[in-house]
Length: 100
Image 1 (cartoon, one colour):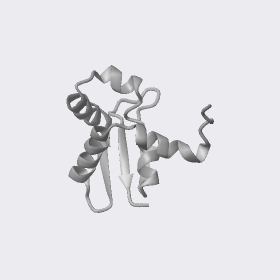
Image 2: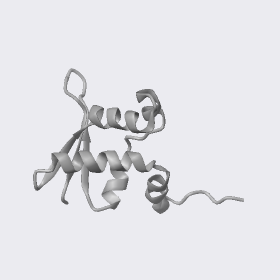
Image 3: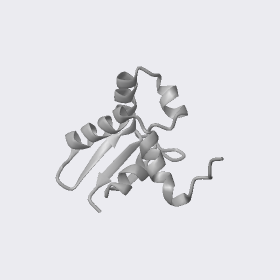
Image 4: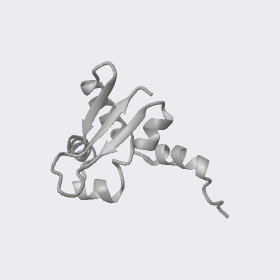
């Protein structure tokens, strides 16, 4: 009988379940955008690259929560924020990866 996952184990389980291609895409996009302090990664750029690498639709990326990488990168030592437009705002959603 399996035991329920413990809260302190969720990040490790998320990292283990994340396809390597997703981490590769984010690593490449972070490196490309790195300015010495932080990197801004546009959500749609990440989704497009993941879609191409895995051969899946954007909908499947969202259904499988493959863009939910914040906790995995925080556990690796990054300060990560995600920003998307609120009501009556129009801009592209993005992640910011920074040194803490």
